Image 1 (tube, rainbow, N blue to C red):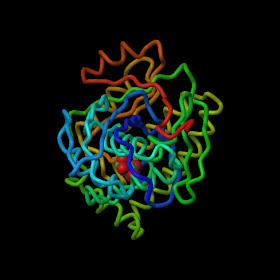
Image 2: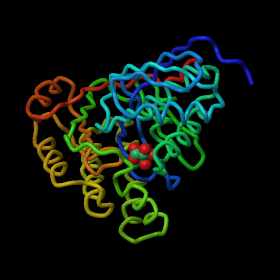
Image 3: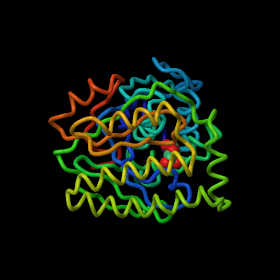
Image 4: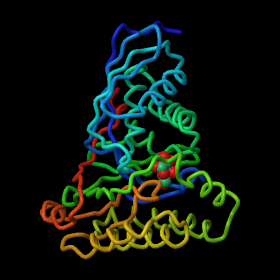
Length: 302
Ligand code: GLA
């Protein structure tokens, strides 16, 4: 076991998921992207684990990933631009930032898997690998088409003309307090409506990638709307408030489509918007909106 460096620094981005929701833990394909909001961490070996952060709840994550990587106790300071519980995966950004600081030479896939195990341990939620993978290996200018069964992935160019808007629903929840594990069990057991969502969503990911390659923004937007309906009616992870936000987003000029993003049960809405309409879109939503660009993951170029 190599000895810990005296002091270290790590940095990792949040993520969006363009399409492919609630399919990662079933070995489906997903299309996330790392985005330009980062969590940074500074650490040094210490007698016991400690965390200094503006945001609550970091300790369980930091310790879990440290232990997963076989690190000795560390004192860690966290600074984050990734809003917690807003759906761009502040937890994955924190876990991957710590992993990249403690083990900068690690392979990005192994780091993502270690961070997934750490999140499962820290929260008791049986999350898939999508968020940690995107934060580790996403690439600026691209979305990442990930096969969660094999962890093979392909980078798909993401056009400059499109802005990625993330709308905060204001319904914040910790995953542990949601029926995430229950939905996963139902889907794994083949419950017909849950399964219909999963099969349809995987087909939509492939169709979306074709539309993205063809720069068919209207087609991409239609697929987002279909994904939302399926998550709302068949997977039952939306809320009336989020449904209303999706409708509002879709009615605004320059918005091609929108849907609930991430685990759901509140959280955030993803909308794809023409770049030059992004500011007007944000003000018309009357909710906090992050306009994001794609970014490099923490383990890119190492
Ligand atoms: C959360 C989990 C992911 C994935 C999504 C739903 O973000 O961390 O693994 O399951 O929900 O697609």
